[in-house]
Image 1 (cartoon, rainbow, N blue to C red):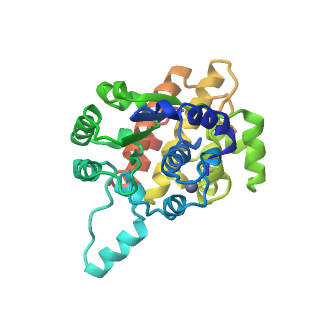
Image 2 (image 1 turned 135 degrees about the vertical axis):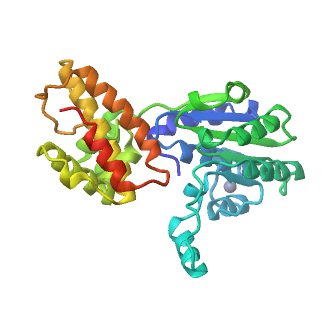
Amino acid sequence: MIHDWNRTLWTDLASTAERLPHALLIHGPGGIGKRALAEHFAQFLLCEGPTTECPCGRCEACRWFVAGNHPDVRWLEPEAISKPVAIEGEEADRAGSRSARPSLEIKVEQVRALADFLNVGSHRGRHRIALVHPAEDMNLHAANSLLKSLEEPPSGAVFVLVSHRPARLLATIRSRCVALPVGLPERAGAEAWLRANGVADAARWLDFAGGAPLQALEYGSGPRGETVTRLLNTLLAGTTQGAATSDREEVEALAEVLQKLALDRAFAAFGAEPKYATGSSAATSASAYEWLAFARAMGHNRALARHPLNPKLFASDMLAAMPA
Ligand SMILES: [Zn+2]
């Protein structure tokens, strides 16, 4: 279901669907509903109901789509997103050995399978739709393979790419797509939406999420937010010992907390308002530039933290590098 703050954008997109591009690139910050928008667009193209209320949600095509088994749709996502980790773990246990963690990349095999699917022709005489999310997670082989399909699209094929970081895509892929930028929603509406979804501290989490409501919802309604609060309290109390976690999930949260804390301290040192509501005080002896450099390193670490590593050592290294 499309989010309220993207309604206007959706209306504009739907009104131009007659002159539909064969490739659409929906891009913008994470946590603002781009994936839902891509899904809605795909359902819109496949809906077989009345054109006045498309997607209708009631026709056979819509019901298949919502159930996730419409034959003319394929999702290209890294295994780590599409495949629940718990199931992988169970299989590994049953096999009596530890298998590899699910891939964080979209692989070339996935794109080749997609090309086969697109070349077969539509089951329902309409479009065949390929959704790629997030497009920047395609490795280079996968991206080059997708480019071939984009350059010579089979008739009826529609590509919908979703990207949080379009600058990381091949320029040749970007140039083949019609770009649809999605911005952060307006502040008051996003806060109201969060409160309606049971987030008590809506303003604080929206700040911490950089204005992205879906991310703020995740912090404000789940264990991730509790971890963030505990790490922040530890760090703000001037100790790093309790923050040196050996938990893999928590290492990623730690990198994020350190990055946002550092940015707030850099803003404070520049005499600006903090942005991420980390509760950090301005009084540190390190300069704004030292905090910015550290924040940049932590941004890099957030990506690294998803890969196999020794969590305890990784956490300790990050904490040791923190400016005083
Ligand atoms: Zn329908």
